[in-house]
Structures are given as C-alpha cells and as structure tokens.
Length: 240
Image (cartoon, rainbow, N blue to C red; front, side, top):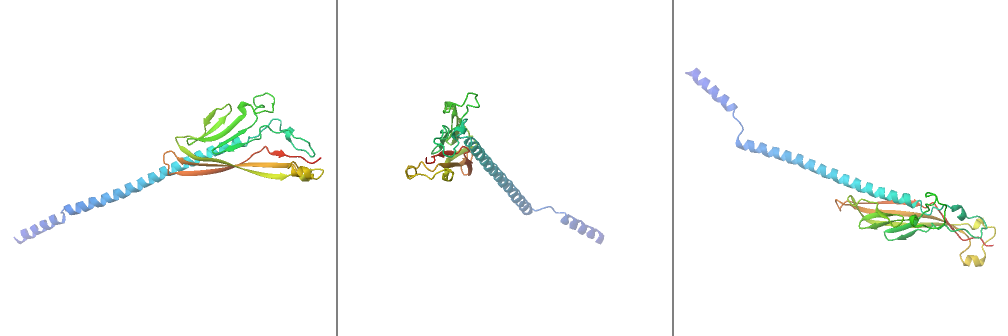
C-alpha cells in the first residue's frame, strides 16, 4: 500500500508540473505581442513617410534647379549679334553701331530678350530683331513658360510635380569708365551731357525661383542662379 500511495503522489506531482498556461498568462502574452507588433508597424510607417517626404523634396529641388539652369543657359545668349564687330569700341571712335539685340526687359515674373538667329537660319545678319528672335520667360498659374519666337509660349516646369510660386530676375550692372583710353580729357560740355567718358557696362542677372510640391504644399524650396551676360554694352565717346 505504501508503494501504491508513493506512486500516486509521483503521478500527481508530474501532472502538476505539466500544467499549461492560465487564461491570465495567455492574455498577458497576447498583449505583449500586440505591443511589439504595433511598435514595429509604427517604425516602418514612420520610415515610409520620411522616405516619401525625402523623395518629394528631392524631386521638387531637382525640378527647380533644372528650370533655373535652362533659364540661365538661354539668358547667356541674350544680345548675341552676328555683326558684333561693328559695335566694338576703339579709341576716339566717333560713333558705334548699336546692337539691336542688346535690350533686356524685366517685369514682375517676366523677362524678355533677343538674340540673333540669322547665322543659324543662313540669311545674312540684317541688324534687326525678327519675330523668331524674340525670347522670354514668364510665370503663369504656377508654371514657368518660355517664349520660343513668334509668340509660341511653352511650359518649362511640370505642373504635376511643382507649383512655382515666385520667379524673379534681378539685374545688376557694373560701369567701367574708359576715360583713360581717350587721347584727350573729356570737355566740360561732354561731361555735363554725360556723353564722355565712354562707359563699359558689364551686365549680370540673378535668377530666383521658389516653389512647392504639387502633392504637398508644405514642402517648399527655392533656388538662385547668377548669369553673366556675355554681350557687354558700350556707351558714350571721347571728346574730340
């Protein structure tokens, strides 16, 4: 009997040691698992949002820089003239031929300029601005447009990715006196009339673009680009 009782005690102890999880323990384990899953999901969600925001910012900046570079490239051609040698200043030259393409007109969100295409389209330089030699850039309804001669405006920026909110061109001119190259000093009359001494005008333009992502107006960026106009202007002359 003692052996039978001792065996029964061992069997009861074995069953007690093999007992499963209680309902409370199971609920605690499930709660901990849900917390871990929620934390992992939150981490990946935040990572995806940050990655998407970075892509939007990079695309916006790329579009603004591309537009700014294209504007700068065309503006560097402003004032090109096939007969430029006729406007080169020389000491004691009485009169210079004026470059008909030299004028650059700047308004709010708008710039107009010219350059000669006569040598490209093969006729000789006619020293006059033709309809296909008018160019410009403007901002309309969040899109930068460019003029490709003959009143043909085309979109430069993509409205599906960027909304351009500001387009400004700021001119600057450096005036260099050429009086030291004159054979005689400027007369009082010519100085008063501001025709002497001759002046060399070095022109530059600063291009500024601001825009926001079309998909998220909170994402805003800006870019600037400086352009040195290659065709300098000369005004005035030496006194006789």
